[in-house]
Image 1 (cartoon, rainbow, N blue to C red):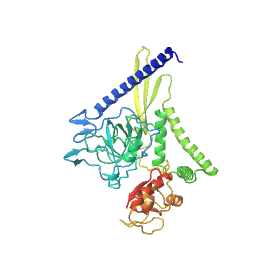
Image 2: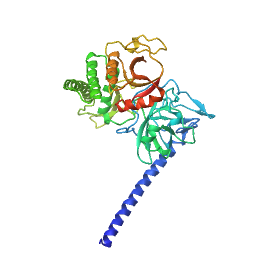
Image 3: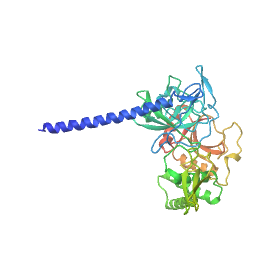
Image 4: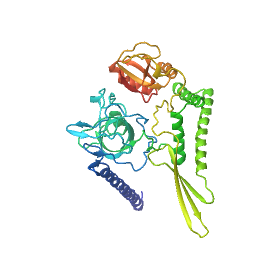
Length: 447
């Protein structure tokens, strides 16, 4: 039989850890409550208030970069503003301002979700709502935007793509798709207290899923430069080698030795470019006996430049000291790089037929590979390429994974690989099948 002392010790530990947990939870709750007050409804000057809502509102700025490492959901990527849904508007007698220039935003408040009753309807930016996707409706953010949503009641997180307007019920700050709501376990309750953080894909300045500091900034700048200005034949060839590696890996689950060797060589080529930029920055920040230099990262407005602050201290014969500072900024790539990623790499730019010079009758649906007319209806988009050759390779691979027709459409300067047309009653199932086949970014396109 255990002694009374043993039971007392166990009870003491329970009380100790229990009280500690209460204190920690209390501190966290207090901090969240304070953040909620600041980010929603507080005064922002000039008659504006912070947070979502009607009338004159402003986004409350983020205090630190958004960490999206390991967070599932939508895949953030650069997208221009949608043609529709980005003008100020009126709903139920209230006027709402769209934050078209929003680059930093956080807010704490109540989230809700919407599902089956809206599935297949058009969203505010003209797309079709997919209840199983990772999307959301927001009153003021530009469309599309990417937001990290944290359920403060259980700590679960998801990334959503904002493509709709709402919610217009009470003071709720976001309306999640069913898929996003399930990801943070709030469908049964219906609502949850959440924290929203904008993932700024338009200036690449708010996420921290990679390294920190000057080295990471330079590396990102070089990568952006490669993506946007890959004009040299050597760069294009190496991009294609990397693209072939990922294509083969995705299609077969394994990669041949020749493809691996080629990809390793390509990786070394790009690593050399990053290394050269780092070495150049290191030379810029070198020091001498009478000069002290500090190399600091660029401000939060851009991740494509490095600002060097050089402080020079000089002492004359009388012992008087003079200090001068010189600030210079070195840019590595434009901050508004417009690119689309296939398998985490940009499609290689090669001198073959491109979508921009393919003749397609306005308003018609034509298979760019065969020239045959296509029926209007519902399609599932799986892949985009800047060349017909790249799209054709993807079409051949995809045709082995589905019983639906696989077609290529020239659109917006790219070749879109899609399956369809698919009967409307089966489009949701077809989308899910292709996502299960590995096309996580697949989506429905009604034509």
